[in-house]
Length: 492
Ligand code: BG6
Image 1 (spheres, rainbow, N blue to C red):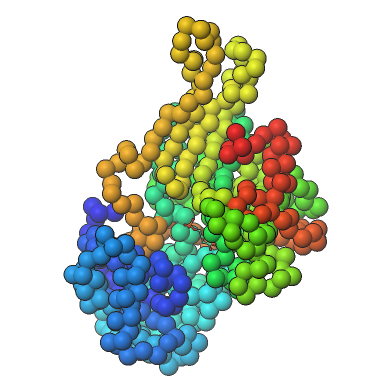
Image 2 (image 1 turned 90 degrees about the horizontal axis):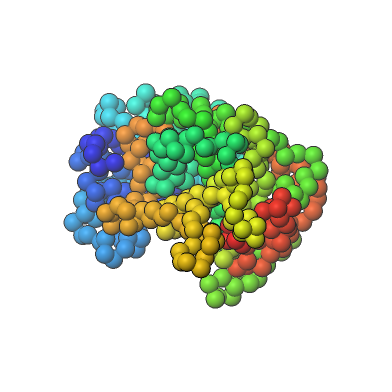
């Protein structure tokens, strides 16, 4: 991102005191400043409900930013420079009066792009869009950024998207999925479409199955109210996991333009086989964690977390056997798995290649046959290609040995710091590039697929299966892949 000069713009951040803004966005502004990626005249207006005068607000935000930046990265001059562009204004999102002040702040500078970042709960996207529409500040140069989840289901996402569309054209709407801002996720595009070696193997002739795991060791982190309404399916599968699935499964785009990439992703979403009807356990497992221990520390169960409703049936774990009904992927299962309070934080994709058609080595090593490409999205970003070689030594005959061709990004690239996804995505919004953002039809097709699963689960009326915190989810998730004669990567 450093080779381009930054666009001069005005930025309004709604929800500036919320979790997302304080944890991710304010530090991201700091790092963009530090990297020299904010144009000297770019201005930032922070907006939240709380009444605060200019000076105490400035003080508070400076402290918030400092508390989120690693000591080694703290730089007083940089913070002062950032704070000099920042102003604060209290705003009741629903009340028209406050919005007039926004037009006043924007002033006559209507030529420069205006970035409207809604770091608020999705339930107020509609009302903010309506109010913004009345202010007259949302001209053709305006861009609105909304976070996932856009809505709670297909119907509510349509309602939000309609209200956004009443004020903004689709080219002005930037729907965030922060996984698309991760360097390693973008690398999937390079891996697939810059390496003909893989391109020719990337189909049902050569790949037997794909695993996508997004595991977290954290629990709910004080977000019980939000999370219990969403559950892991809406919070993670509808967005992050389906985006990863699309990047792995999509056909090559004609170019790197936003619409070429998004057209191909939509084709994948449309081809997902519905998981409806009675949903047997060999296609879908939902779990909820009970008390256990993670990294040697005892942790409470989901129903014992602060603020919990002890009757909740919300899932904190999902594994799904997904299928894509098209020529490229017919018969290739995509096993998706995500959960809270699993043993470690790890996001990885494993591509299992089919074994050679005729096996000539020791029969007792037949299980080794087949190459695997392991793509580590986080942590320890990199990839490994598991290949088979011969054991060294005179006495080894033709014993096979499985070993990795390894690429660890931290070692391969002389880069001390990997930018956070939000830095990349904020930068792309400022520059007006939409390719890392989710188009309306993508969100809607993803919701349709998830909605029919959730409807089937509701009909099934079974509580989620329990799993102890610190384990890899319910036993049924292991059984789901074992039924196909397979195992999850960490069980190998
Ligand atoms: C968010 C979810 O979108 O992603 C959280 O709402 C989740 O529940 C988080 O913890 C995980 O993101 P990351 O970048 O830490 O893998």
